[in-house]
Length: 63
Image 1: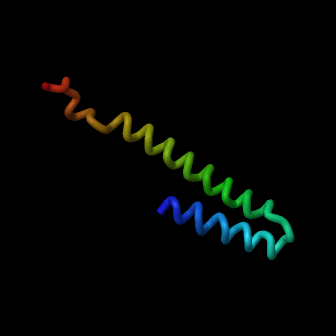
Image 2: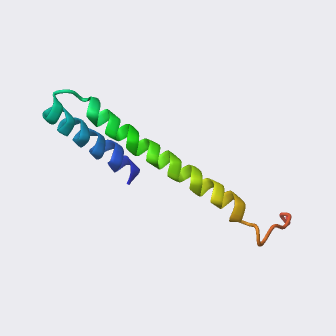
Image 3: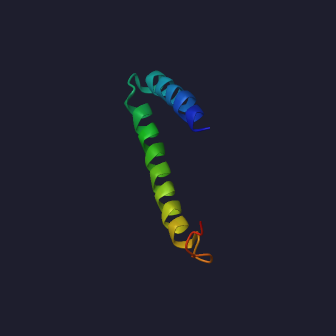
């Protein structure tokens, strides 16, 4: 799905931005905003995952 966002959304947003404004700038800004939202979301999930995953079963590995 991520490849679809990069391969489809980026081209579509750049094309729409070029038609609407005559420049690709708005499309790049929209894609940058989407990337920033994804980064913030992944960062918050990473923090929650690290604090909760394995907390109930914190034992040493047995070989």
